Structures are given as structure tokens and as C-alpha cells.
Image 1 (cartoon, one colour):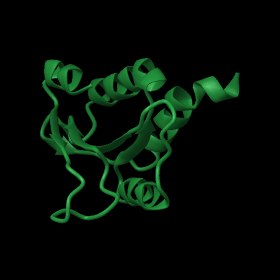
Image 2 (tube, rainbow, N blue to C red):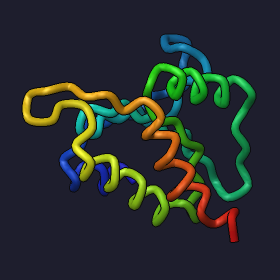
Image 3 (tube, rainbow, N blue to C red):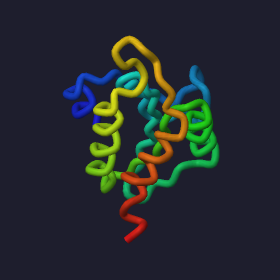
Image 4 (cartoon, rainbow, N blue to C red):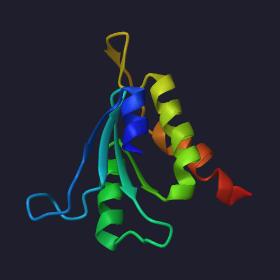
Length: 117
């Protein structure tokens, strides 16, 4: 995951669950073309804690994108983040423009496509 983010040229920070950071902070904090993204990485059998879900919700309420990512989700994640990068969200030609609701729409289209059948 980190290698792929690095190859795309996107900023990310790997957090470490220790006493020096806010509990529930996602494993990877990323900035992709001006969009703040929090990724909570889980093993196939791992489950996010209620506090981790709360932090991801806080990120989304603040205008970012928060996702719980399992190994099987990597292809979906690539689509979602590539779309974020391609849309030019954040700074576009020097002008900041509104993305309110757009991230939720992209998440619904790309992230939840499997669940729709």
C-alpha cells in the first residue's frame, strides 16, 4: 500500500498506535491533490473499533474521505484514489472549488459497487 502511494507521488503518513497520538487515528493519513484521506487498514479478519469508525466519520464530516480497507479492497481503493487525483479536487488552476458531497458520491459509486451486486 505505502509503495503504491509513493509511486503515485501522493503524500502519506503512517501512524503508529502509541500514547503520543489521538486514539483511533487511521493507519495512513494521505493528501491526494488537496483531499485529506484517512485509511484504516485491516487484515482479512480484522474489524475496526468503534473509535476508529468515529475518527473516519469525523474525517468525512470535515470534508475528507475515510475508508476501512481490507486486502481484497486494494483494486477498489486504486480506482477511488485515482478518481480523486484525476478530478483535481482541492487546488485547480489556482482556484479552490467546492467538493461538498462529491466525495460521498465517489465513495458510493466506486467503493460500494461490490455490495450493489
